[in-house]
Image (cartoon, rainbow, N blue to C red; front, side):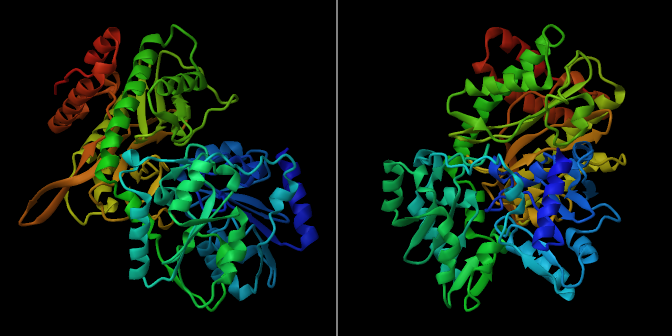
Length: 597
């Protein structure tokens, strides 16, 4: 029971004299998604969302999470002993503010320093300095009460060929060292998993849906030390790494290794390096705190990666289009649940050559469940699909050719006037953003209004970003590019849009207790015309799957919206129909038919 776990943690806190204990959603590398070993917050609270931080005191327990999870967290925290703190809502304190209020003068704040990033540690220190709070960060208390904790992942490492990566690891390493020199850094500590595997052109499976490898890296002008579980390396991978002049060291040795630095200029990113590593650095070292140079290099996809992504999206488009055909034809004839149809979609993806795994946990949501933006179907919540209302599926795949992410909402039968209007607004918003033309220098904040305008004019909104960066056979959420109307500092996704950056384009609308709608395509930024005003930029759609015309209300649309939809559907039919059966092709022809205003 959740209460028993909370009681056990409080008992341990009392034994160690800890006044408050903080449990974030993180691994040792500040990854967005984490392996089962690291799901301490879920174990303790029962809340399964991918973002949230728990704080426990002797007489209070709360979970802070963002707008994506308000509805879900409210349900999952019932009876757990934890109350929900809705981040960003009026009257809700920050975690730092709450701790400053409840901790006694000279008290002790506990946390596992390996799963709290050093920037947050610094913010906690600043907020609590006046109270002379001591940090107890060397023990994982939740781990001490978690008797059947899953083991730390140690899946095999494999090499990503240059035909997929587009550039050699040695080229990337040389570029990184140039960036270090420009920053006048003598040492670079790199702990973000997607940056490490991208740099070395390797992949693994230590985080579900993110093909990364648990590892740390230290780079100088002359050497590279890779801290990794050696059991994950076969002879081929070991020889490959050694040919890059990489020294292989035990995974946990990083904490003692950084203590050997003396009078170095250490390049690191405090928001992406854990508190324990940062705290082990001697004070004689000068810290250069800035975003890892690999972040921008990784975000700007090279021509080979972009062409491969186009191929991946055709494969993915075939799978999702076949899924739409099947569900539209079979609804009401055979039993369907949120979980069963999600499983069938996964089966269709597995039929595609080069498919590896989902790029995130599929969101399969019918009716009011779709109003929970990041809903995850469970045996308890699993709804039966009926030939009425709307069904939303947000899913993606990892292919050798890249990473996909797509959302489609479908009418399974009659829908209400409001549902039809909301569906149409969402489609219009997605297509308008995809057709944006803008001068170089724009950031996602400049572009977000293109998608949000139709909603705001009607007093509506969606409580998530319009777009996020997407990795290449990597994390489905990738900084530093994104599209949102306000800065969210921890997302670090407000970079200038560069040619080669890939984003999602996913407006939506969520009406609690009724319905949820989202339409998502992936787009790649490219150069448009250049004239006396400068370099114009534009987007190219990568995703090609029909948009359900059964839910469209043409009366809501302007002429340009009809043209955008017809143009898009023409491309869908051209690119996807060659892979359909004759029966599927006939359906697709109708599903992508021209509509008129």
